[in-house]
Image (cartoon, rainbow, N blue to C red; front, side, top):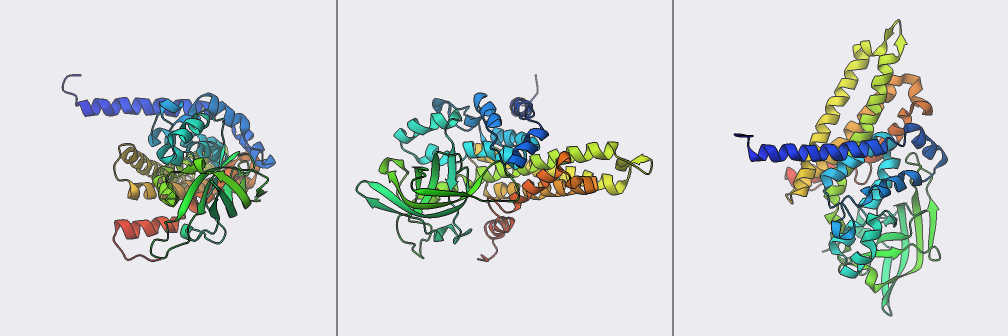
Length: 395
């Protein structure tokens, strides 16, 4: 090893570790084949076998510190894990892991010691599922205008309001709930909102599933809340600072969402390449035609470029370096490259692309979500043009 930079050696060791994560995640994910996910999608069935398998292997605690029973790994490892899951399971698989890993993060960063000790080990073991209750039908992307309110009464909080697109509410026992605890102030519109780890008590919460285009195996819901009581001990951090706690999780989530899009793009691309190699028309495989081959090659290039941006953003985040621009770019590129690959795969298969037995249409339906959520492409561009390029704010 004489003459070799210690930095180079450290980088090589890091790559070996990441490859171990990738191979282990890929092997476990592919125990649940495309037919499994097609069936979950068709029956709108939560993928409990899949979830329990990953929980048993310890993956639900990938970001959780070891003191709470987790792996203590970084966003880089989590993004690689979810890319491999999404390459087979699409958004149904990705979300089934994603929503065990990320909703507990505000508790980890800002919860009391008692709250951490009570909940985090259960999250790490995959025994506790939390719904995500932030979005409201009248507020949209302007979270400052949520109307769900929590009032302090005799040492507890009483919540009234409505949430929409609440993931996991059909199955979860807890809900990460954002509510106003003081009126909106135009000068500081994002203050006065508080984050709760609340029981999703059906006596006070009317949960109605949303019939939607894709990701049918993981439920999205409207939740109508009328008199839900939350103990003071289940306030996360300080009253009135809940939105700032959510901001802490935006960059890592955007990185991972970008990698999920890339995973779906890669999964669809593999299926399209296999089809192009074996489908014979006019006495030759259709992959011999540049009109078929070149668009697939372009998709591969864009997926590789998007992945490099996502891994760079994850590296910056894991090393406590500024990564807002890179994280937003990773989400944007992952969603765009993933959708382009799924769309081109659909085009490659032609009419068969519409047939569920070829699996492309499920990737195509599910990857489209990432151009809308958890942040729209337009809001990413607003961030880049305002924060990175210094252009005047457009909204």
